[in-house]
Image 1: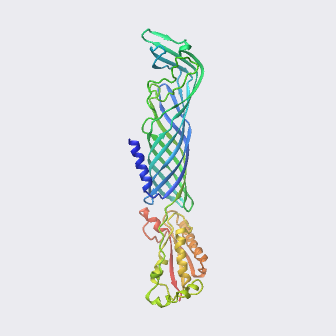
Image 2 (image 1 turned 45 degrees about the vertical axis):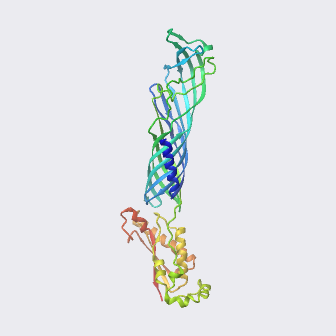
Image 3 (image 1 turned 45 degrees about the horizontal axis):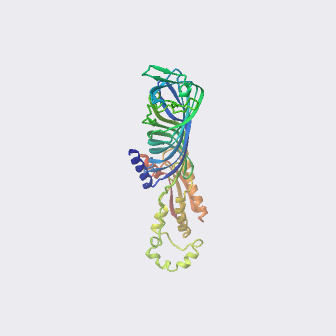
Length: 437
């Protein structure tokens, strides 16, 4: 019931939020069941997983991640020689006896596929242009499939002890007692769902405007055993009809053999994150906003003005609304970004239309950064941002001799760089109008 409730909460969370990032994940490392046994030894083997997920960032640094992972896990388990596994059975004559199995060189190769649903808090912070440090911590619910077991032994000694008669039978093959050499068989074992503690950390690298590469490490560890208790089941089944087709039961559920069976997965992880959320676009000034009362007579001749909007100046001066729209800072929020984003392009298109309608103005274009990085590097980034804006406007018909480029780097921040949430506001380009009339 608790698991069903948790799944419902996770699904509801996944539907109601608007995720900012979609990601694809692949990982690999030691992945399987960490055994605790006094008479045997379990070893993790290489496994891995694939996953898809969503991350909702509610600030510049913090977010919540969820999704679904598919994992492949494998183990080996070896029983020490000289141990006898005993359970109580009933023979073909309805007599109760103690079934004793003494294996030599007994070994199991195990694997299973699981589905995990994560819910992690994620933190990220910039450490260099286009590079961030991140870590995530939280939990996962693991739903394991059946464990496939390939068992083998160089020898199985199958015996029956009848306490009423104080009799041991160890060589009666027709009734299921005797010695089996070079035995092997295959079976499946059910596993229990478990809650995992999960942790991941590493670096992210910006490879495109809205694409991030995550590289790092991960660890998942279960808080409960995966084994379903089967204390009355021996490692092989008793067959009253003979010893030729002895079937494996596996060791994981027998508490006499395995006292603990916690899940552990740790290794290297790669993720590709695709940003879905868009920055809010600055609306272009409407005709009502850009038309002042003194310009009303000019607007009556709008059809004539529209025909020459790109080639002939029809306005004497820009309106206060247009000036405010042009001079509002252009946001370059990502660290190190020097490219015009689609959001900036929309606004620059409107700015170009306004400037093309009035050739009596020139522009000072100045690039700025936050305080991440050296002064020299930030001065260079600031100039590249100014150049990117100037190149875009030039392609929209604004002559190069109307634009004057500057960089202030990390100097003259718009707001203090502390707290760090202010830094994106300082990564900007400003356009300052110069009236040459």
